[in-house]
Image 1: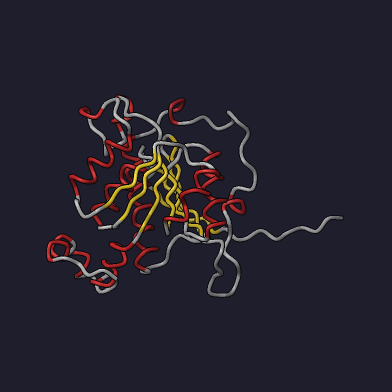
Image 2: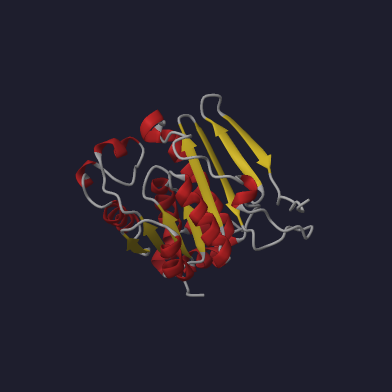
Length: 255
């Protein structure tokens, strides 16, 4: 692994002091190449905390521009970046925060074709999208490419996140579940309204996005127990966290 410069050692000193991470873990973060879907409410804290943590290469997929209504929650952007491409605004913010991080911008939508062309360049996928089409596409692509997926979702006052590694097995030898084991059927179009229709508390996206960044750091450094086979739920109104365990579904034989 590439050694850390004196500037990096000073910058990441609080990480390096942790025995669980240390210099080796920080070098893993520097060598990591992660792809983030969306520079919105979830993507903003993910991008900022991964950049601050020293993740060496961050790919960013988003074809949208910054609007005034974004600024209530998408904290990587500001009033001076209105109408800019979100990828450009986010890349500039990351460069200002940590010049050691390389950002690769993709001004397009994540779909099956995009994954086929680009996902192989990265070793971890983070889904901060706001629609089920992208979530299923991300899950299927990550499973096929055998890269970990950290995925989160928010709505109004509630948020969820999980980590998917379906190409591996648990400690007991049982195959890890897939996204489709958790959500077997895609909801019909229009059944679940999005944040633009129902609203969302800005700080909620910060809570879930920061938890997503923590899971990414755990996966990269190998510390702790990532949320594989567990769905973390957060209710902001009651300040309550709950965890639901889910497993690979058994295939049913045809009659």
